[in-house]
Length: 355
Ligand code: SAH
Ligand code: SF4
Image (cartoon, rainbow, N blue to C red):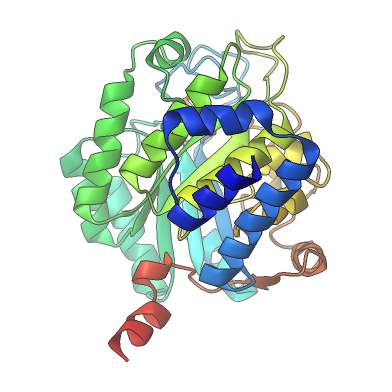
């Protein structure tokens, strides 16, 4: 197995069969080796910087009915809210003053947020804070809508492909199609967004072959960002009785992704931090280099429950920011609140390639 890990580290690629063989035969020793190689690769590309993002969960209305998610439209027990443009701007001001230079606006697929409303909001944030990156995570929209959002000043978009297994995808997403989702991802890339894809680990009936298909899809798409987190059940969904995804397996997926795409921006996700008390640390040790901290007002957080037991830290982005920075330091890394663009688009890269 060590030879396969070395080959992956050197070539940043492995075939389907090799990835399956690796996943089926990883023992503890090889797992450590894999994480070490991934962590070293991250350090080579991004040194020891861990980028902090400020997350704003601005609407929990959603027209979709994803089987795993607490915001699904048929969950009538979900108390819906949406923040006003003024409230969102106020949060960006608080975030800016704390040092955040990336704001991630995330929400359900809420038809209230038309192109007009969103472009007005993005323009206002960019006018106030031109040095900040605006990342969107709002689900599927048309290419022309994405184009307008990009022109208004958003520069990054997170849209996980969720799973590459068509069978599993259609079971979990009534009325949606994996083809349409993938088209969105290609559209986003073509428009010029730093684009994020990704998947969940531990969905009911998900197989090793499915994970390998996810990894190979990522290699083909070459996204700038990849979000990988364990599935966690939510009490008011059809998957309420399913078990959570395994944090160890999630970290293996993080390391494989890092080695397949050395330059990728890879968060240690909130879900990983929720299934394991040291989930963030484990993610960073497996090659992750981003943390998304929740800037949403504490009083609305309970309503934005994609899954049960979302991190236990009450206000990590504000009150406990220093504690988070300390946790990062203890992993041998440094918290960085700068924009943290993908290395191919960052100023440092431009300078170093010009010289
Ligand atoms: N509506 C947007 C963004 C919000 S959901 C979208 O779907 O893209 C953001 C991510 O949360 C999803 O991509 C999904 O992978 C994750 N998620 C939703 N429910 C989850 C659950 N029960 N366990 C783990 N992750 C979940
Ligand atoms: Fe809506 Fe996203 Fe949840 Fe699906 S995962 S129900 S699109 S918020």
